[in-house]
Image (cartoon, rainbow, N blue to C red; front, side, top):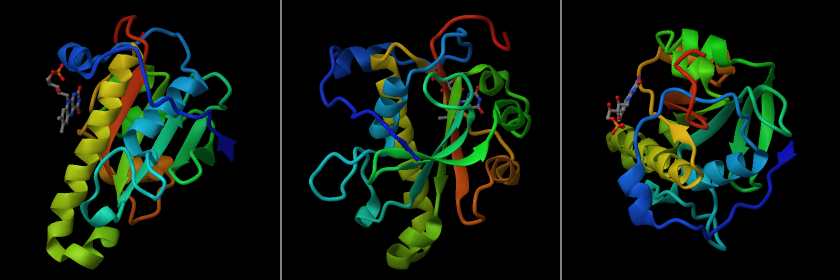
Length: 202
Ligand SMILES: Cc1cc2nc3c(=O)[nH]c(=O)nc-3n(C[C@H](O)[C@H](O)[C@H](O)COP(=O)(O)O)c2cc1C
């Protein structure tokens, strides 16, 4: 278990400037990501921001069907591997050793941004959690929630001067295989992240 440094709830840039700067970035420099930056991005996506269990992103019925994974490659103070984020503990749990970025890019149409990024977030949905209350509506709600969490990552990344892109083109079962995901954790989005720079694939 890797305890993450606390996330900041204040920053130096306005939401308006973050919105005006957001752009998909697909090439990254070789600069590694710090644990502080990863902590901030994970908290933005699914962190707890209240005394109860509520999070930075809204959730239908507060049922929290999303699971957030980190595929770490080039990071300081964190070994390469696949980690699951715990919102409650604000910590990372290793679920698979070694650098899986190339394997992940292969099951995502060989998109080079995934192999080149120092790390990649994977948002998965567990439909059952939401279907217990909302039945067939759950698929829509869970997918919308992935969008909310994803946009939080994208905007937080801008504030940290990091580049990201949302990747929806991938083989679902391939991603499950590379990350060793339980069958009911269905991958919905990949989000590579890194400092902008270099050429794609460098
Ligand atoms: C649901 C979704 C799936 C996407 N999938 C991919 C993808 O697989 N690969 C990619 O390079 N970009 C992907 N994108 C990023 C879009 O190409 C990008 O947002 C669009 O070109 C607009 O550019 P901008 O984000 O810089 O404004 C995706 C975006 C969304 C919202």
